[in-house]
Length: 224
Image (tube, rainbow, N blue to C red; front, top):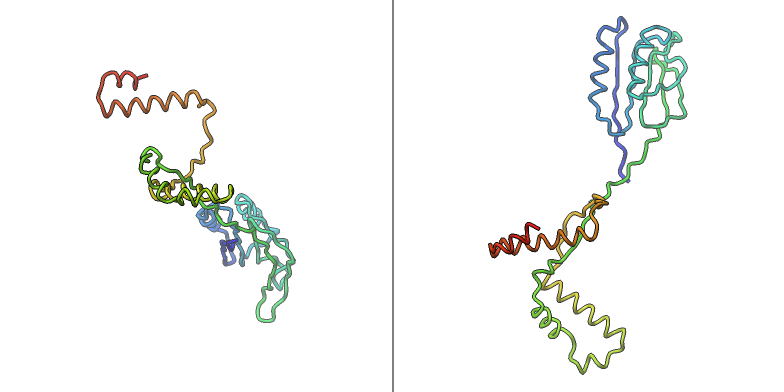
């Protein structure tokens, strides 16, 4: 499994009117791709949760499927100013701890990230160009590679079968090697029956004959 990547947005908003803050935050969040990666938006928003500004902020973040972590007060005066919003992850063990060096408290929590599986490698199909295979060449290669008749006749059935199969495979690989190409992932068309496939094959063969001969009769066959 590959490690999950996380998008983090850390915010400090000075106290005062919202001005263009929500519009700028909207533009920023819209710049992140919707690829399923966890997104964490946190920081000192300086927005009291009992004010109309908080409703506007929460509505905006909810439109991005960002969920707010429920915490106690994060400021010495009892206000919840330090906010955490997360997307595509699970949170637990939320703890708010007062600090001696700041009037803001320390917010900590555990995140459980979704696992990311490795991408499946593309499917590959293998084939041989049998049309280019010379039967006489294959026959000669097999006959010269197989053991002599006297040796072959002394082999038991299983050994003789394995020897013949491996010899045929080796000769095919040398004369007509396998080639690879991306496998077709598109499901077959339900209307393309076996009969239509045969007709299409015949028409393509007739077309190839006409391209070589330029004979009008071949052209008629190619035209169906």
